[in-house]
Length: 295
Ligand SMILES: [Fe+2]
Image (cartoon, rainbow, N blue to C red; front, side, top):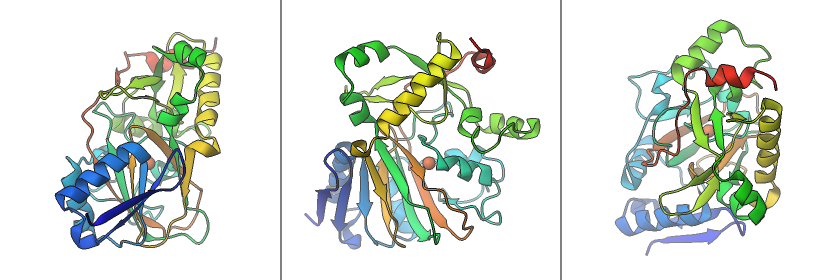
């Protein structure tokens, strides 16, 4: 076997040592797939993948998806490699990138199977900031008390794009709200997600806007407390990037965020692996407006 995978922290993270020439060998792909389940996030230090090599691994792991094609300003004729950067010449919707400073799960406000995994290569780094943090939402569920597990089972959470960019703008102009709504959906997702294999995780992030049937301050306070719980150090791995590093994470079981940076030169190349499980459904019409009512 031409791959070695070592744990980084007890509850999260794995470091992968592999000969790049064997990256898409079936036994290596299988080892990566099962380590992803176990460790949540896998780091391939300074492996320096080209876009073609990254796409080849993405395709070997499953079906690729390009869910950001709906993002205004993205080039729909572009390849399935999405460039994350604050450089407006490359990415015409930097609001979307600024939203990544806050805990989130990729693709959670789009009506589709939740993307299985995200794959990211570091091409150019910022002088300051730019580390990526990953919080294990399986561990966050497992370590709850039995009483809390019982209490949260069955709760439904409305996730919106408005919530995910609320920290980017104070009161956003209507024109921007209209654009965001065109690229995303209000989704009704379970707070505790029971995956097809029986494992359970919390489904959290800044896009979690309120809990169905609960007064808004109470619902949001609970979501905020759970987000803080899930982001405690034991559940989190922080990746300090070097150029050429490549990271894959289980987007269905981890939330992530980037340490803020201002440098428009930072460029990361992302591909996405499609999911097969759809934990939630479109929120009924008017759900967002209902959440905005106080009390
Ligand atoms: Fe992300």
